[in-house]
Length: 137
Image 1 (cartoon, one colour):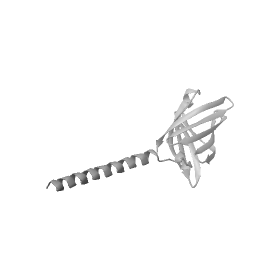
Image 2: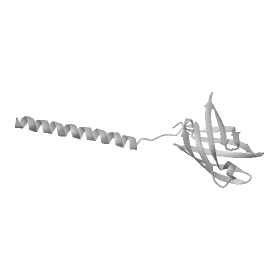
Image 3: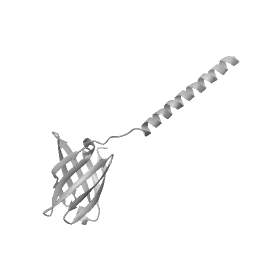
Image 4: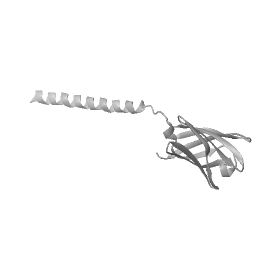
């Protein structure tokens, strides 16, 4: 009876060790997974902030869609919506322009996971833009 109990203890310890190593292997796999950003990472809705611009343009929602292989951009502000023009996508970067009060504003942004960074530029200067993806998550 003693030898059966001893063997059972050894088997239980072995099972526990194997289970623990499997769990640890899964954890290290998740930590070492690399996400490669693609143009499709751009598609979605983004809350954004622009530094040092007029209050009505400082925050908004950037909506990027893709229909029939073509990207579309809509900038949603509290005062109304602006449509992106000259939209160009290269990898996880998007370039477009909007017209604000008769002035062309060029925008370049790069998606990095659920973060968006870039700048807008016009004859008034260059301004940093940062955003966070809100849809799809």
